[in-house]
Image 1 (tube, rainbow, N blue to C red):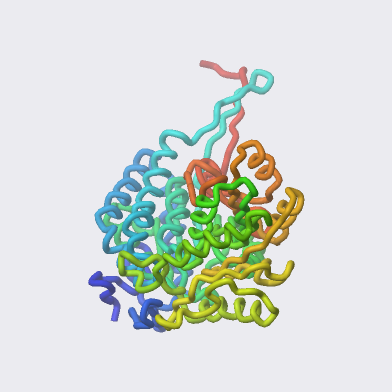
Image 2: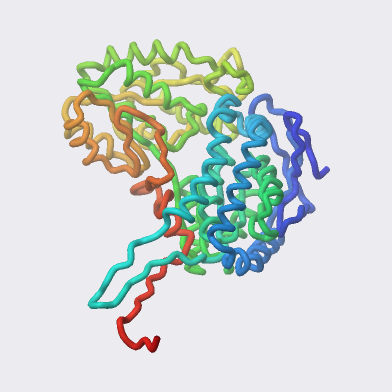
Length: 487
């Protein structure tokens, strides 16, 4: 079977290579986290399919690279138009595939997919550039040349949106693309391939190879004909990719894990602080940017905990297709058990579970209850390792020096949230935090003009605005002499 019906939408389960559908001899079963139902058999790619896709992308590269920025941008705007026309289809399919809230997909996630394409199309035409500058009478001109084939390996927590954070700038830069979506959530990547083709993207410019990381992914990142590799996921996988890329000196961009602090200062607005803390349960805690370590001043800790607990009690956990649901299931049984293991070990170590602490007894399945671990042991794994589920910790501090040390006290540095009533004090603390993004009295405000990425083991490189083009393109400086001209 090459097509499946998911939420009333027809999805092709084969790879998309050189503008055509390509099947594999082997398949793997795609299962919905909502009810464990089988959604379909997906073509299981490996070296053969990767070789075909990279060859197609390499062959298509000269033509796409030579396409004018205006013409590239026009196709990208057409892609955005078609995404907007199919927001409902994309939202319903992705909710079935990864269990995230349908209302979020409809209102924010899928419209953001279209925005990603519009932004980078417009940035290419209107904003990409550097002022010429003079050196001893010589003129320097900076330009961004297409680099070649970009391999994009994307995660399962927001499959299409996070993929298009990479696809859009890569295509805008003039690169051709081979996408390997996460094996747990392959469906919207397939739908997007149809959209790209309908928008007029030439054959071979965008390709999708589905399959397991150890098969399709490993074959892709070690391929000698790649010019760029961009990966979002875990630190161990990034290390494996870096080793494979090293043989070919393929440049890599990594957006990796996080264990971000959510700092509540003594003068913080408690209502705001509690509201922002509850937002860390977004997407069932499966958000790399989440401030999962709540660090609250001891003088307001009890009041904050009570306000936070009251707000959490209003959250509704259940079927993500229900528009009233606030928290859905975890994405996969393997991931669910990983989260449960973290919490079970914390309990065994004597941690105080203020609420939650295990599966939702009423719902069963992959629904893990929102959990808060209070005052866990300093340095314990629940504090230092990424759980990637609806599990937060709460610790107290007394001084600025103490909270800065606690906030910076993990191997990660992706983001931080700071809640404070004093702008000058907040600025002082923010300057000392090691993180790629810091939100002060807010959360999840993301502008594509801004640099996005992590410090320490949270990543290598930055995405957004010119930073994306700096990665996907070969940045060139041309120096013109003032003399020697005959005209």
